[in-house]
Length: 346
Image (cartoon, rainbow, N blue to C red):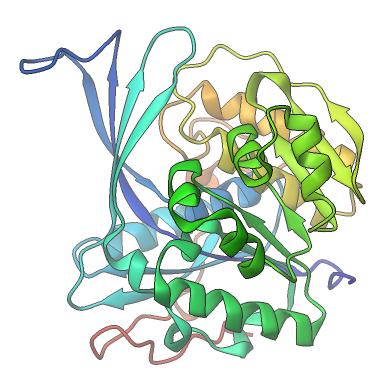
């Protein structure tokens, strides 16, 4: 498949409110644990979109479903990062919320408590094939696979992308939810995906193999290109049953690893759309991941522009990006959750 020259990146997935609690050491059961707590915009899909825009993708669009309680805030936050929000507003379900418990020790590892809210309800009725107009790549958040409406949407979207010749990438999203879904079911659902971007844990879970390289190689017999994200050990690029490249990580002083995977994926996709080969795109992803873990939350930093995160172009920080005009901004529902129109403006 070939991408549309200078085509847009369309991300379909979750837009979530993150409540990030940073604590040091084990939680004290049955009593108080001191923590620094912040409310931040998040969602694996939305974070990928923001990092793609931050690292140089000029046209990024985000289709997601949110509740009326936080829709305007999420629209503003996406637009401030240079992403065109195409949000379906659910009149009944609240916006999904994730509580991120971040241990501020050396690893900055995190644990998630997830209430997916309205994002679980996104489905085929929220899709229009016109959303693919001008799109060079389509990215799906793996969280779509963990609900019946989301799985139905993935099937519809993959068929539409295949008909248009638009390549599709997918991030499995959650080892915990993958285990509940089942490996065989997952592999069946992602048939037709061109690029798979699992973490180490996800790759090993999907193959039953303990070694990440062996797991990436095996997965690349099912999906043409597999890029396994290994955190502090960098990334692996595998095709046709063979790991062809090991990409080194970039040194960082981690504060919060929440957005590292999304940062990698966003920068990787931005680089691919800019013409980079997968190995160079993976290196861009590693640089973005290193930048991400030095901040708090899943979105790009706002105080300054990117420092070498992308390969092709530098882009301003989220706050410095020009906000989209009113006609570009949002496809919002007015009738209980169904979009009045979801076709991206020309």
